[in-house]
Length: 339
Image (cartoon, rainbow, N blue to C red; front, side, top):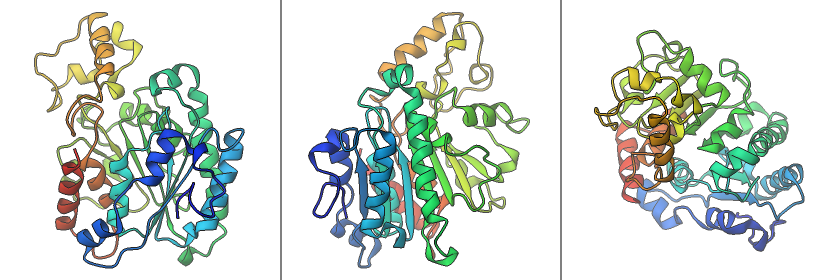
């Protein structure tokens, strides 16, 4: 059920540090059973590293073969993950989905770089977009041939630079029917095409750090304040959630900060941003640039570290039958307890 294991066409050595951490991680069967109270299904985790194949296209082909080998298309949920620059997959996002479905899931990711995300963004950003688009296209091509009632719910996940790659697979957030069942993107980059477009066209009267888009018909936002549960309006599938923090410099950094005051410093401050924060030409740009270095050195729920918000987002996007708000609360507490 794991790349690098018995029967896998991907060697353990080729997975790299982040790939090995991903395929060897996740909740155990005992942990799944303790949470659900039912017999779990062993989760499927698949990964192709930069040393697993000569290029991204070959990695994608390898990933699809792994999906078919393990029976991933027979699971309740199939999640396509676009990694960060280094190939990292957030264990809280991956594990939350497995808890949600008691292990009856398949998650797959491919690596497109070994560099830190900030350096990948500067020199290999195109690889993130290619990886996200090609993995989606290849998996969707096979998934779409399966009978509608006999194929898994297809969902996408990306965090940080992975949101850029994930967005490249989706050209129009208002035309997702039949293409995907749900999307979770955490900590998007300020200049992501879809993200920046959604925020720029947000509903009148909503703020940049707490936006609403077309009354939440497709896209909604979670910023750690329980916004998803506060919106009672109809929300047909497929559902898209952006998880973000007002204190995440990854989301708010842009060269334009040097010369223009952003909306998030013109409007009321986010709940995790100091009210003393002000905009000064050039100075604010360097302040936020310095914060990029420390974005991962916060506790969960602040900066660029996402925890229980990922669990509540998955529960809102693709809740399994019989799932309740109390179940979401238990899962959020479990994920946050991991630190």
